[in-house]
Amino acid sequence: MSFYYRILTFTSFITLPFTFLTGQERISKVYKIDLQKEINAAAWIYTQQGFACAARQNADAILIHMNTYGGEVVYADSIRTKILNSEIPVYAFVDNNAASAGALIAIACDKIYMREGAAIGAATVVDPTGNKLSDKYQSYMRATMRATAEAHGKDTVVNGNDTLYQWRRDPLIAEAMVDERTIIPHVNDSGKVLSFSTHEAMLHGYCDGTAESAEEVIEKQLGHHTYELIVFEPTLWDQIKGFFMNSVVQGILIMLIIGGIYFEFQTPGIGLPLGTAALAAALYFVPLYIDGLAANWEIVLFFAGIILLVIEFFITPGFGLAGLSGILLTMAALILSMLENDFFNFKPVRANELGSALVTVAGGVVLGFAFIIWFSSKIGSKGLFKKIALQTTLDTQEGYVGVSMQEKSLVGQKGITRTVLRPSGKVEIDGNVYNAVSEQNFIPPHSKVIVTRYETGQLYVEETDE
Image 1 (cartoon, one colour):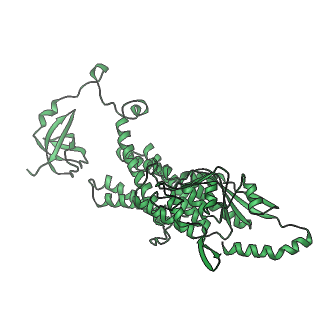
Image 2 (image 1 turned 135 degrees about the vertical axis):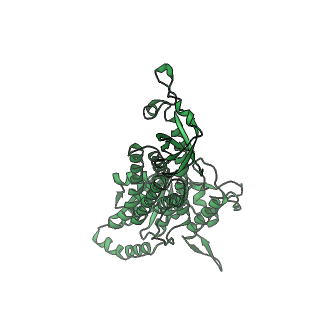
Image 3 (image 1 turned 30 degrees about the horizontal axis):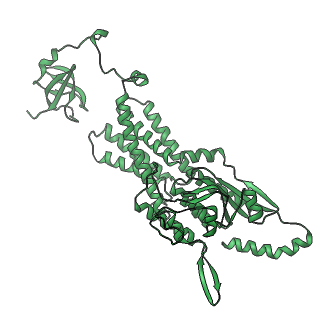
């Protein structure tokens, strides 16, 4: 029970006689936040905004109306931390489901009330396909669930001459909701992940009463007979920001950034690929910047990485220090912009937040390379791609004329490069200038070369010391 809640209870007790004498009952303010979808970035944003609004409204209580099968652990952990640190008492109304990440949030609340037929538990950490993750992730979730239950402290139970201290919410029960190996006699000895029905949760201290509606919780369970119910309504911007801060959407944006930059480097001029990459970068960084996560220096770091990649592609061909530095800076900027670090102070960053950022960026990079391979295979095959690329075959039956084979006689002859070959350029052989392609990555101008082959109307050369 928070300090604010004790003061509120004491104040109500003192003012009760005056309320009786004047015949007026104080109107309570109850602020309701709905968490009835997946626990994700949007849910975290709604919780932050809702708690801030409740504080401005001087609310007497916050009621979280919950019906969720879970979601992303990183955001559930942020929400439960917000609840545990709240000066306003927070109550949960489980309207059918508080599974997985929802169970963690419900356990963090001061009181839990459930509808008849509802369920709570099953907090094992799984991947997006529903497969159980390694014990590394389960271990962290077990500790988080235990710590959340322990945060509510113990009750003093006097039995004759014996004084016992009993957990209000047994931490082992919270752990058993994550790990089937946690055996609790007469509670969970089946070797399965623990979940409670409403009555089982009441029996074991994980439900403080039943109710069929939020209003019933407020009136019958919390005892606010005269109250004002304020429901948090997210703004359009909150919804947009929540959508673009979703881990899946962020991974797709990273994929578009990588794919757009790659295809822009492969085509002359400035076109659609660069525009796609720029738009994806804006949609990635702007919500994080407004939310206070992405700092100016992290955005500068991202553009510095892009500039180094441009230098690597167009000024210093090959793969060297500039290219490697560009990749590292770009990746670092994408990861750091998702964390609550203060420059290089990472103390505020929790391990699960760092893990989520790494997984999101790594997933986006993998998707990006997969997109490059897929899109490259589609160019020139059909539809829109056929219109923006050269045809793979030019048949003489369709009117195409073959090129002269006279230059094939130049194979084996030596010459000098007139321009840089990167990999194509111009060479001079016997006083005549020809277009040629380097068999190597890069040949500087005024270098001695030899013609190695002639294919599809194109001379190929390589540098020679003779």
